[in-house]
Image (cartoon, rainbow, N blue to C red):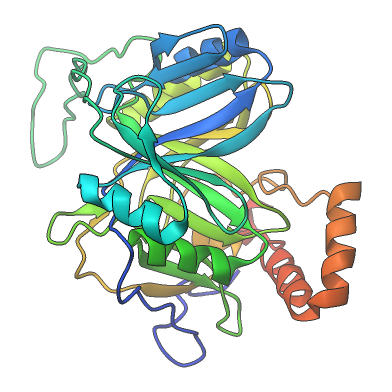
Length: 370
């Protein structure tokens, strides 16, 4: 563990500059898309997690939160349990035409709740990126009142109690997701150049080499979540987790109680992140995919510059249990071994980066927790 997880904004760090002229500027993360062999099992888990059914067919499941997005999670019936892609939105119809023209696609009618138009793209690692405009927003759902907290400087509850019900927390939106990629530089530049994502905090190895970046939407003077997509170097292209906002700490904690009662597999938490400041709790769905409940995240406008930080376990959280060893999947499967061997032949420098990244995440974040 480094004594100061905040690395530096200068000597030794390699700058990750913003895109000077992105193709368009995305304005919302809409949904994550997965393939699942059992939609009934997926639906039960997602309802227990706090989402609600927006629409359902024999082959498709659309889940929503309390916000106006028509759906924030899409599951397609298929043979495999795998990540398929994400949905973004752009503010103008012309943005879709621009994307289609410059990135080799076409504008089509969107299926699923909300309708509208869509451009289907692929990022450099083959992840599907569906860009929407013109969909009909859903009517927001009523949100249960937040619990008012007594504090030394304020009294809000006298001759009264607070007793939150044992029920799934209400998910308000899909807040962010973490994309792993074997080529960090190529992938992060694509999202920045295509959609105007801004680096909020850049994670570096000890020599200053960037290997991960929390990136946010560029909404100008309007504050945006600290990160919408975190692009991180990994052994393969995958999604590490998808994160859903709930209203407060009590919702995070009650969500844990519900998921514990349902005997789902816990991944990590409850704690508070260092970068982004979210109070977090991670759970795995029936196929092992990590889903995060979070509350109280940071908001940055476009003027906030990027920070540069050391990538290690201690830099991932302010308080909470240490990152479990199985949270980051470093198993050397036959497929991964084959990819690493091929990479070692044509790109030894990247293999060295992967080894350095693995080593940086080996030591416990808090020595007194071991």
